[in-house]
Image (cartoon, rainbow, N blue to C red; front, side, top):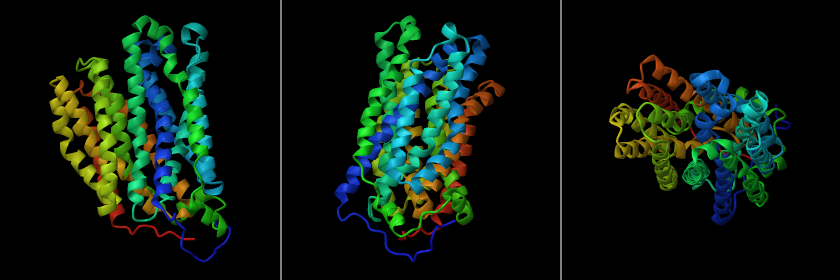
Length: 438
């Protein structure tokens, strides 16, 4: 319920694009460091978390337990979205993002000092679950706030482009985490890596946290939120207002986000395991291939963001989903031949088209919701989509086991994600962008 019903007034925007550009890139760097923290765990989970923390469960059990800890952080994200979405709509975007990055940095760093099963039995595994919950809560409020910092400092003309810039945080975080892993496996023998080397990437989170906090402190609150406060339009419970006023938009936003998030879980988590265990690729080759795909995203995401300013964010998401749906099964059919050039092509082609949907997602969601509960709406819709996507590696692994790892089994999952995002983007394109109010 709103505190007051003040009459609408135009939302002030910066007079120059320079502040908007600076805020967008600073937001991207902060998101990159948070993504690094999260992806480090994803890269290490199946290969180190299982043997070190869940070894008594056996070969299959410890692998499934490691993948389940990845899913756990996604499960709690909606709770974090409710908490931090409320803070973002009540206290401000900037203050909320300081909390999210602090929680993520501390939780990731503490993973690096946990005792393994050999050292303390199940205590280490229990603490690991607690820290994964903290990471998931943090991520629940991170994405929406980063998008709003960028878009609410910009004018309407380039809003779709600036909404795409924080999306660079995901590939940058992936590149950084993969690079750290590749360096470590090249300089440390396997026994030392398993004994203590795996801790280093997590401990790196502590100095990165200081960088992230500095960047977040250097950013001003958005003029849009300041105007919401000045006009007395803050909702008492934004979460309830969101579902009361925009229930259909929430469903559309969730569906639109599935491909961008789910394809990344499929390609960078499950496909790495599948490629190593079933197709015979080396883990290093798989990481190199995913890193090449991520490097390409550094170019394509801004380009797709610029395209969104011309044709609309929803249409860019739609074309990305349609393209992914068309190439899904041919891509996985080729992958079964298990050559490195085909692997590279898979990561590039299978990355570019979902990246279209990913790059324009922030702009699509920004257009769906009014400013006074926008942080809650973006955070909750994204978190619910991420929760579904968090189970993609586990579901795909189950489907692989049920089909004797037939070449098409990952394609089924990717095709479903593509179709759901395609329909949602089509629905979003038919709605008028939400006008800014004061």
